[in-house]
Amino acid sequence: MALPGLRGVTLERQVATAGDEPRSPLQRLYPALGAPAFRLLWLGMLPSTLAWQLNAVASGYAAFVLSDSATTLGIVSIASGLPVLAFSLLGGVVADRFPRRTILLLAQATFAVATGAVAAAALAGQLQVWHLVALGLVQGVAMSFNIPARQAYIAELVGPHLLRNAVALNNAGMNCCRIVGPALAGSLLATPAIGIGGLFGVMTAMYGAVLLSLLRLPARSAVDAKAQRPATGGWEQLVEGLAYIRGSPVLLALMGLACVPLLFGLPYLTLLPLFAERVFDVGAAGLGALSAAAGIGGLAGSLTVATISGHSRPAALQLGFGVGFGLALIAFGLAPAFPVAIVALAVAGFTSAAYAALNNTLVMGNTDARLYGRVMSVYLMTYAVMPIASFPAAWLADHIGGPATVAGGGAIVVAAVVGVAALYPPYRHIR
Image (tube, rainbow, N blue to C red):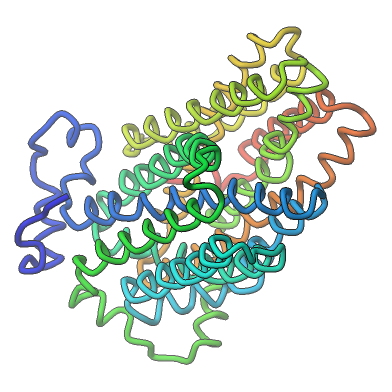
């Protein structure tokens, strides 16, 4: 998307322009799109987000084809999650010490080089499982730096008055890629002229396109350059960030509420093949319909939160989304027929995405600007618990059945969200 004159416009001017009256109905709904730099970042990063979704399908498919082992799928999947737990705190400190655009450039370049190496191995007929594990580890490390820097850079580009809307739009883009990615990956893998090697090559090109768009963005504003100039060492900054979160009752509540659906609710996504094969007997086509229902609902939920990001009572709104998510999971687990399950999953996707998007925006909105990177790095760690939580959910599904496991998880989500709202007064004062 061409944005003439962007290089010559100061960041402060871009933010000020974004605060003017929007010029289109779309900008009235999503005023953050009125900030040229954010618009370029948002659109420019979509290929990277889509490539990440393509990789999830391509790496798993390649691992299974090479090994004929379901266990290998789990190893390849966990390889990208473990580095997030190990390096995300460091990534947050780096995001608050150095120019965020530079960090994004390095992270995207790492994605491109690692993916390109796997593409070359696949096209040469030399691809092995350890290549995929190594790719997951490298991408996990890069993601630990990419996400805190990206979230903090968004705040840097739009300013505090548009932050909630911008973060919600960012989440909407991720959910859109979650819908498009698996379908596109399946189509490309099924095309003989493309296959596994070609798909990894496509992903490499996507990361390259992101690098070009990032180069057109401002490195940092003069105000942010002063704020980011480190007065202490990295270890002191890390300790400061953790102490800041520990001393904020609101952030503690939001961090805890971020973990609840990830631990007890979202593992239902891992169990969808079980529902397709054993519960409803609808096969691969039915599995696609279940996944699409959750994805479409998720996109709608993210877009909805972006339109109501200025709601005067965000805590009450989040409570409603959390309870709705839990109830939708109970309805899905107890669904007597496949059409009912589809509707329940659409509602579950909507409420879970809205809940997560709102929680994300509230975390950013209740954090000092100089600590964005460090706080978001801790927040990022909550997302690393989902792959771990999927294992006990799968074990329970084998012993008590998928419907009971999902319905039970939904009940825990409802109880936990209502419990925090009722018993933890600081949560009720979130703005």
